[in-house]
Image (cartoon, rainbow, N blue to C red; front, side, top):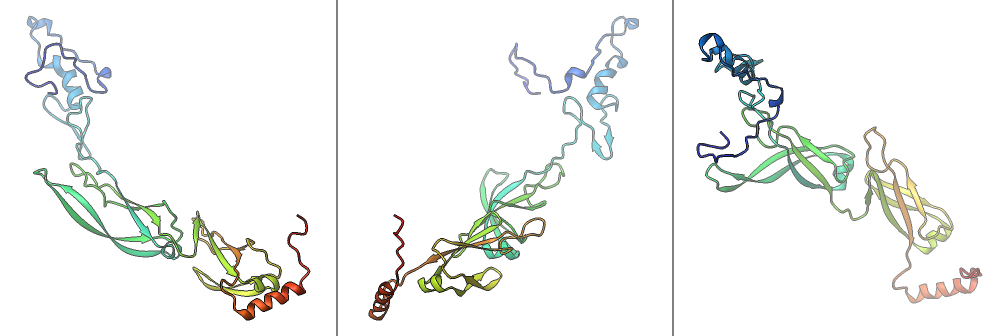
Length: 264
């Protein structure tokens, strides 16, 4: 069948996998003058049709049994998985959400023409979803062949860039600006987390770049625990000080004996 009616002489015959273990007996019956009888081909049809006799195909449990030549086998096949990408907010990844999405799919018709179809899905985003994670929608991929089950739709998650937080796995990172006087004398500074606002205690004598860890304020992990939130304190000077502020800074300079370059 592969070579066709006009096969070229000398083309190599490539038998299918499994043929090595099949023993065919085409010898004629010596009792009939060398003419082969039906039994002489029994091994051939046994291997071809898995024991159903000449021209018969056996079925097991409603499924056609496979043969070494691929004839009479089960033609059903599960559809291929389809992958797509979705972008979600960090808030949805933190709290979890149910989102409607619409995906665009190019379909090739029987006439070879292409058309674009739009399919809508409802996607459940579990809390703790991280960048690169895949959400599986069972049976929403390509259709199966010969009655086979449909494949799955795999949605690769991408987290949208957040204005305040950076994501490192299940941990979050943020920067908290503070004033020079808050760094010197200490303060309680409001800080917005994804769970709501907290009062962050800045200790006296805080240095720029110092980090504080807020336990369990990161993304949820598989076991139920959460990652952490690391806050870096950044001392910010007034960009346009008034004359009064300049005067006070000058008084501070004269009153203070602090020299940050003393050990240089």
